[in-house]
Image (tube, one colour):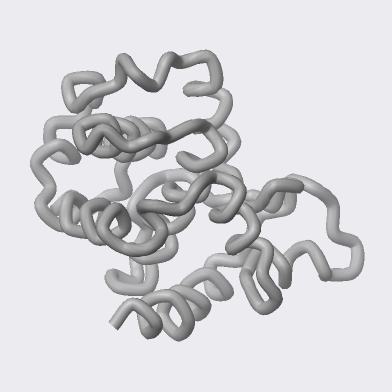
Length: 159
């Protein structure tokens, strides 16, 4: 396992490559929510960041803008594990376990719109962020809120 967070674009490519290998549908919206789930799960389990970008609150839920902008015009069908530049990431068993567990959970089979609706539910970090006084689109979603939510709501319900 890497001692420093990975590059967010490489982790996003890892998720797309994993979904492609399983011949599962994925688009940008679904990728952003799966990336958020990986981010939150890793944070809750390891008390550390999986990658170097933090989510922002956008109208359709949590978004990682750098990743979105870098992959927006990509043909996801062409992304495979060879597309990832970081060999440490490609060989990190802990990352594989997290991504595999997400794929095999209910999140893996949900469509993008269901994942967006889930990210908006009452009590979610996105909902807390967007309800704050003075909120504006693009505000960062609080790390502690994400960690608490994933530790006490998401991971607890997965057991």
